[in-house]
Each structure stands twice: as structure tokens, then as C-alpha cells.
Amino acid sequence: MTSSENASAWPDLKPTALLVLADGTVIEGFGLGAEGQAVGEVCFNTAMTGYQEILTDPSYAGQLITFTFPHIGNVGTNDEDIETVNMAATPGARGVILRSAITSPSNYRAARHLDAWLRARGIIGISGIDTRALTALIRTKGMPNAVIAHAKDGHFDLYGLKKEAREWPGLEGMDLVPMVTSSQRYTWDETPWEWSKGFGRQDRPEFNVVAVDYGIKRNILRLLAGEGCKITVVPATTSAEDILAMKPDGIFLSNGPGDPAETGKYAVPMIRKVIESGTPTFGICLGHQMLGLAVGAKTKKMHQGHHGANHPVRNEATGKVEITSMNHGFAVDETTLPEGAKQTHVSLFDGSNCGIELEGRPVFSVQYHPEASPGPRDSHYLFRRFADLMRENKQT
Ligand SMILES: NC(=O)CC[C@H](N)C(=O)O
Image (cartoon, rainbow, N blue to C red; front, top):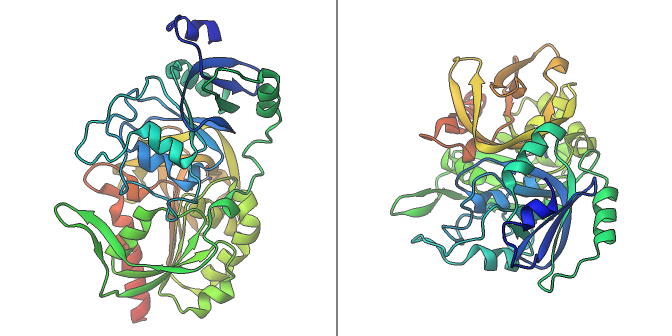
């Protein structure tokens, strides 16, 4: 892929944005969203819907997303499809890379054009990119570090941009949780959205759950509330002693950005004590990876990662294939799972680990995002399973 190939499709238009890869490749395009520059790891996401949820998922901090689906922005944006809890302050993806310019939004829920919404959130975007070629490059070479620069006047410091892309240290070894975790405790009782009713409230909670916030998403909290939980969300560095002193019926370990081995330095000692206490525990994504580390397994960086809404995962207990939403660039190395940590789910794309359960303990986790998985709410059984474990544990 060369910049001339790309620019040749629009010979009369001056490029207003650049995508500069760490190997020095420069790809010209047209800026959208905020002006300025953003550095991060480029991953491709294959989801056909949900761009607003994806862009506001705190797990994407430190990443630039290229969507393989060409129609991004066509349903606009609204205030309901945001996943960060602190809507204004918490970063999600740093940048977005699109094939086509954003068309006028056409949807009854559209409140704002995606371009204006990106600008308001400080997200830098580039369109006019051959996203198929970029995806093919990621599939062969892995996820590159890169800078997206957007300047309306078309002036760029190419030397500086190449240097920044080359020198960015990369996600491996990076703890990004401090950027996204809540600094304070708060409670949550909003339940999932229902047709003609909107969001509800959990006013008769059966369980008290402590959710550790490594970059938690609203829809996870809603599904927990929908299963009868009153949730207290606590900052990522909260100690096991403080958590257990709250006498929770269950503990939830959230998704989040960055390298699990790095965040695990403070999270893993806490998770070990929580497991020892016998309290039912459920982890998603980063929470799953750190649970793996806590039982002695290792995590590894993936070549191209899994990012999309159509990832097939086999449930080892039933043999059924679940279609799941995923966004991860690290994985638990299944060959390092110790005895007593059973592999419950496996990716059908590459055989990587997608779920574990601890034998004899009410503890389980999954690599994918059940709250965002498509289809007839396939993966929501995991939230019910957590509720069942808490109910059983309360009775004994
Ligand atoms: N969605 C997540 O929680 C991502 C976990 C981790 N940051 C990864 O990229 O693998």
C-alpha cells in the first residue's frame, strides 16, 4: 500500500490527515473529528454495527481502530449508546480509521453527526483509507503502532510524526487502567434498555456485588443490575481487605485496556485473596486475563487480536457455538493453565482460550464481552450463572 495509490482516488482533494505507521509508511487521507494527533496500536474491528459503543469502550484506550465495515457514522450518534461511565472524562479509542467519508445520519435515534461527536470527545479520525489493505497488512504483519494526524490546513511535520510512531513503546508492558478507572466508589442500579420503556431501575436487589473498575462498561453494569444486583463500583487498586469488608455476595472483575501482566501487578494479589475467600467471582476480558494470571497461568500478546461482533466461540460444556463480541489483543496462554482451572470456552478462529472456571470454587470468567454479543442474547446466560452462584453461596 503506498500513499500515491490512496491519494490517486481523489486527485483533486488535498489530504487533511495522515496515518503514519511505525515502519515509516505514510498513508494520506481526509481528517474528521478532532484536529491534532493520536498515537496508538492499530487494530481492525469487523463489527457491522455498534461503532459508538466500540469507540467508547475504555478497553480501547491506547488503540486506533480501523473499521472493516465501510458505513460508519450512517446512523449518527446519541447519548444512550455510550459505554464509558464517566461520559466526558474517560477515554476510549484514541483514533478511528475509515474507508468512506461519513454520510448524513439517517436514524430516528440520531442526535448528532459522528464527525461533531468525535470532535467533542477529542477523537481524531481519518477517512479515505484503503481499510482492506490495512487489514490485510495487520493480518500478515501484526498490529502496528501508528500516529493519526489531522490538520485542516494540510501541514504536517512528517519527520516528527514518523519519530513519534516509531518511538511509541507499544501496548506490551503498558498499564492503562489508571487512565480509565474511577477515582471514587459509586453505586449502580440502572437495568437494561427495554422496548418502549427505556432503561429501568433495580429497586429490589437480591445481591450486593462489588465491581472492580478496570475500565468497566455501562451495559455490563446494566446486565448485572438486571439479574438482581445492587452494584458498588470500586477503583482498580482497592484492596481485597476493603472489598471483603463490604461483605459482597459476589465480586465482578471488569474489562479494561492495556497489558494484563502489567495491571496484574496490583490486581493479581487482590484477586488471589478474593478467590481464597470463597466469594463468587465473575471476570470479563481483562478481568478474565488477570484471573488467569492469579491462578498461575500466563498471558501473551496476540498477533492480530480479536475485535468484532461475530467471533465464534465453542462452549466446551455444551458443544454449542456462541457468536460473541470481542476486543482483545492479549490472551491467556491455554498451555499454561494449571490443574483445577478448566477451559470452558475456546475461540473457533485460532483455538485460543476464551473462558475458565475454577474447579470446586464459584469462580469463572470469559474472554469475550457477553453484554455486547449479538443474536438472541446468547451470552447473557453468564450473568444468570453468576446470580445462581451467588444464590447458592448465600444458602450454604
Ligand atoms: N476488552 C478487554 O478487556 C481487553 C483486555 C486487554 N486489554 C486486551 O487487549 O487483551
